[in-house]
Length: 430
Ligand code: SDX
Image (cartoon, rainbow, N blue to C red):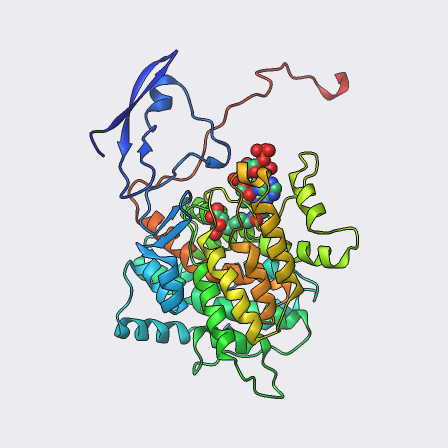
């Protein structure tokens, strides 16, 4: 606490609100005594102005368009680290030494296999199953093999759960993809790096070896890092909410995956590609008409990949991805009409008063899909890739929540506006 304070003046009396001091960004007015003292609750749909926790993981400066993990700039991490290095930073608080990274990487590599029974689990799905439905179901399914690690207050059990989730998520994702195209499951290989192994399981065939393009592997490494964590976003808040009831880490992460799937959140990367494809396919749809629809208050259509609850400037991740898209396309599929359309959309929107007044800029999802596609992933796998990237962030937030003495089960209040009381009417009198 600090000696700064807020004073809340109401018709029910005044209340002094202590201030929770940050190291940077918004300070918090502590309203924990509000309801008991003045009988009021606060009203803040979507918790747009409400902090549920202190956190030392990630800071997002929305006005400046800056993102830092444990104090390190996202640009530095994306340009110099492996994804497992950033996962280590989020989970343990510091960048690993070479020895720590080697040990951590080896630990992850030795848990990439799924129990053989899981093959029947994948077989049970229709080929048309959305891979996000499989991902969250499989996350709960694999937890049945590790019940000894459920206890959230046992740090060793949490550590074992975290390792297995990070190690096995690429295998689950790749096997969901293989199932959808009727190809055999490809087993993980311990001689490959984390991203090489994922590409191997995704695109190798038993009939020939897959030559992994280092540019593709490097691009995927950067993409996963850019998605690693992002403060109290919808899916992370969901992981914390489920974990606050002392549900195990697997169940909490599976819930976060389902929140991520929504098109307003992680599902936006797939929706961006569908929006761009529609412009290419539909002779009546062009950049101007799409922007006009996005501005029309009577049209529920939104410019997917644009806008953000926190960023009121260019999302720094989108900046990295916009530059990266050119490099990757040059080395892979060559020119992509979708990238040209995306840039036209961006140019028109950024110069349009509607978007300028609302400070709507491209977010991480605007360019990520174009790169995922150039790397060979189908659009329905894009949110799965987001989930693999966000997994260390979810786990780090869940750990931080379970170790925080201020943590209470998440149970928001409401302002009730329904009928106050009514006499019961028996069925034969209604
Ligand atoms: C992610 O939170 C995170 O950190 C998320 C994320 C992460 O790393 O975890 O960054 C990942 O989810 C990125 C966002 C991906 N979603 C999309 O790209 C979907 C399109 N964008 C939106 O639907 C919207 O911008 C949100 C959901 C991202 C943010 O919604 P908010 O903060 O609730 O803002 P809002 O809906 O209140 O919009 C404010 C105004 C409204 O207009 P008015 O009512 O004032 O007239 O801006 C308009 C909105 O209609 N608006 C848009 C728009 N986004 C907001 N209008 C057109 N197109 C858009 N994309």
